[in-house]
Length: 385
Image (cartoon, rainbow, N blue to C red; front, side):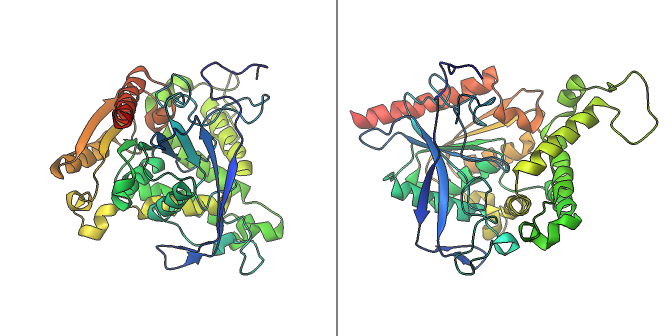
């Protein structure tokens, strides 16, 4: 990392922590007696408090969406390509909030936190969360920050599900919603991938039924396998082929089961890195929240009826090679929004990068998101006149 930060960066940022003593009732029938949310902010909140934008993270994401924590950091936040001065979510115009969801493992209350009622680490006793639970906790943070209405709520993948839930749970509290590389419910295939990942973790002897922290161990093998399976689904066949092909690490076959192909080395590296920085119980919880999300389920499968409460303007974006959350799923959502009489724009972006495309800069993707956010800002200016 150089001594100076890029000019288009939000710069050095410091995470903040909000504490809540009021119990949070959860969809599973349990409650959190008290909890913390860790978050970051970028840009300045205007006097009217009308320029706030909430960014919701995906499964393995967190509150560090943009900028750097230290000058020595090798990489910026996970969505730095889209948040900052002159970027689609322009911090010269907007006050951006990024939160680490409840149940996470990057500071917000989760399975590795202490249960105040027992004095013991929550571990597997931490209650299962739903997307609606996360949205409710986010709304409480907005209350604490004095934000009555978001100019926009934006997210990709699992983050996009949270955006959709925001439009249904709190229709009066957001003016615009950008749902990127997401779906209104997982397919059976997606649920199957999540179950394979969970079983990889749960079958690791070091998992200890979720109490691994008390045994001073980590289910690294299970987490590694879960990440390897997941990572394959985030990439496209084209991107993996272009990056690795059938390249060998040495000049000849070894006729064994150690790493021989470059793609094997890559997946093992990704799995090893993930196994030491992500909590296993959090991974189980997050994938279950993905599986459970289905707003139409409460309306006999009628998505059009489920979307009735929404009043905001929508942008839906998908990517041509995303087979995890395929464009067909986004089109289903767009069709339902149109039938429900909602204001919606849709862009299917040509990208070779599969599901991970939502994290990367792409000329047409950036233009679509920038155009949407320009309209958001013009609305703010008109309201101020």
